[in-house]
Length: 491
Image (cartoon, rainbow, N blue to C red; front, side, top):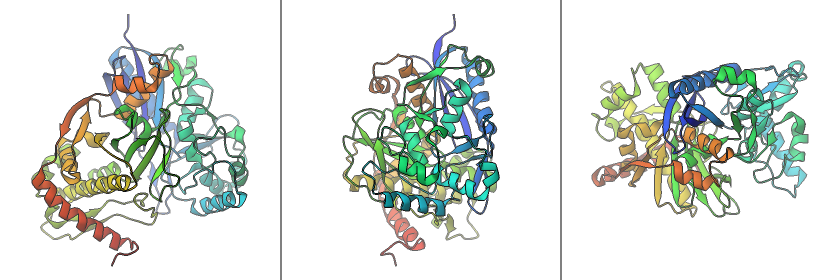
């Protein structure tokens, strides 16, 4: 008799991960299949949706075969905003547009102005350039004949549920990335739908995270190595599920996800009435909590760029070389904002830089400068939360960045805080499996599942001498990048 387990999928910006998790939260098998979106100088970032789907299917089939398990339920952790338009046969009309694509600035401005003019009594959707609705508007304006055939606009989790069960469904947090849904509302915002010229029927049904969507259809079950009895459950945004997978189920804990982007999440019983630009929030998956989020668009993707373009054999090898470089990277400074900035202050025009280069500098110096810059970004975003009243007593890291003990210690030294490493660093995969188990009835509540699955493996304590050195460098870093990006008050 095969062991029964749960499947967690994490559909990221450059690859799909699949993990099989048993009833005690142990990760039995993990696989990743990569893909690479294309990016144009104009800010267009795309990839055929079938490449994403096939990468996820192959990863899932691999771990199910390796673990020899029977999958009771599955759920998806995924990025927001990324979407595809389908015709009446369910065929894509264009490549999937990735979340950080920045083509729709003008359309986002128009949509925002339309909502402001509507003087809504209901909560207003968050409109960003990266949201799906402005990009749908852009496509309609630039490709009218093609988009006249559009019958559905589906985000990634919606597309997967549509393919696997025949029912397009999403959760409220992911739905809020469309710019036509306000987190906490009961339905899509009519004024936003009208302004974007989108019909409600063209979008996915909104269900709470952890809600059963339906059984996997027979054809999909066979190719995914699932059973027709496997239940698909609504997942959620990757940053939220990573927080859950790391055990973030109560206030005063900060979870730090270092994947393609860097995201910090903490919980509170009630968000402030207004949040400053660069600080985001909404209703969390565990009632009655809200979440606060800060993030940097480019984190792990910068390291991927480094490996690809500067010829590193592996990031582990670069860790070993960077460990021989003194604190401060021999004077090299990197600004890691390769594709704009969201926190601490939104600045879509921000770009990356390597500064103070001399002929004696090496790849190891440059790589350490990248790690240090991302460490400074982590500290600054944590301080944003603290400066706005969020009390943080525990920090827990996860994602690809948590696999490097060298980098974990560096971040602890930079922040001057202890940082915990969970047993399962692929927290988004674990969080998705947690929702799958909840939807299957394994837990009475998500909080119960969070407590059962998330366990700590190691704690990194800051070195006082290193922290003092980093403290000086951190202040210099802030002054430098604020000058480069012309922050108010910089000189």
